[in-house]
Amino acid sequence: MAFTVVLPLAYAALAEKTGLTASDCLAVAGHFQDKRRLGEALNWAERGLQLEQHEASVSTAEHDLRELRRTLFVKLGRSEEARDDAWAHYCKRPATYTYSNLMKFVPTEEQPE
Image (cartoon, rainbow, N blue to C red):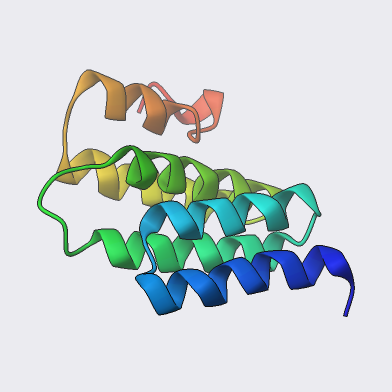
């Protein structure tokens, strides 16, 4: 196993022993994204978002994990999932920011609809 894989997995193992957080998942996901291991990065982003589901307020890590997950969906050729995720988030928290974020994933020709 290459050093580039051992390091984030060792970090994750330590974090799990001490209490894995969404920020930990974001760090590991970011590392895998940098190494172009997009499937593994997506798994860690989703894991971090699952941890955040139990929190009452939105954290910076949750915001960053959502953005990362959508970016990974697009890079993996799953643009519709990125749009659907942005739409679901907008429906849950309608605001100018979530609307403009949604529009990033809607094709230009569909935006008037």
